[in-house]
Length: 454
Ligand code: GDP
Ligand code: MG
Image (cartoon, rainbow, N blue to C red; front, side):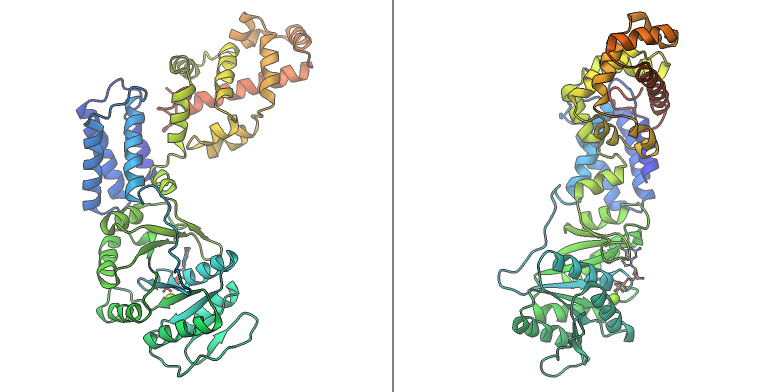
């Protein structure tokens, strides 16, 4: 997906005005990119429709160039679909216990999530209880018990009662039974007496949507009246995401979504499909098999991830406020022509200073990971020293650093109150930086950023 979108945006690079055909061309590319990422067709249609409308509409910004505008709109739409742009916290009951029920297909990651959620809640000072209400497979109860033990969270299961990680088993109250609805009910009673403040109910799932199991999930729901019903969905599920999400939405009317296996493939297709089809918020993301591979879901980050833009919008906004765009454009042109001199470098340093940390600025640029080594060579404190050195150079030296020989280096060092090796260091780094910028300006995704690309 991300490559496709990078391509889509590349087409917008450095065009003066956004025409209808420009937009449509780009929309086509975005559409293809989203379909590639297994976003459902309906979702893609309505999404691109909205983006197109907005791009053609009156919201034409004076400050942003066309590429930046479309990027901004796409990002805003994505963020809004993925959760109105805000993180949705877990809904806790006014009177404990808070009951959280997990639903989803078999293999979606429910049992794993139960452990992660328990661990996370315990870490936050809660007293969670895991409940084995998946009695469909013989191993399911044992699996949850193993998970609970690893998380250090007690597990309530039929017959075996409650086992804590310390091994002090607590008997289940009343009859234990193979009936998952009864197990769920009993677990709430136990939570009241033992003061567990959160009850996480693991339920059964089938490989396909199954009416019998859906009814079972509904019965469990009706018996315990959960504060949250979390629909767990494998992010790799692809086009089936829509159908599955719809079935569970109708079946149990879940309150939130957890995306699992986001570590597998960077695609955000399922997230976009589920969120737009059900309108339900995504609460968490599961990112691995370990207990800690779990995070609160951030719509804005997911949008960026889908677009592979890093924090490009923040960058654009900052840059727009403070950069002298015209200067930056000239510098960018020089960079790609390879005529970028130390005098330009000095100008840029002063611009960059306004933006705060140079490292964090550069870190915002997508694709910079591969330049991390070079990035490390930038040191904020060095900007002062660098400036002093450049100021000690003649204009000719600044324009054409190649002429700076040994005796010039000594003179410059003396003038800047530093050593010849410091001057050597700067010239070396400048050369590297110029090379890097030249290379980056030829790369995709850099186009819209003032000062960093053609
Ligand atoms: P359930 O049938 O819904 O309870 O699914 P499980 O919790 O048993 O998970 C099914 C498989 O997916 C197991 O092998 C898990 O280890 C694995 N799994 C669950 N969540 C994740 C995740 O976020 N990332 C990865 N890589 N694997 C996961
Ligand atoms: Mg399970």
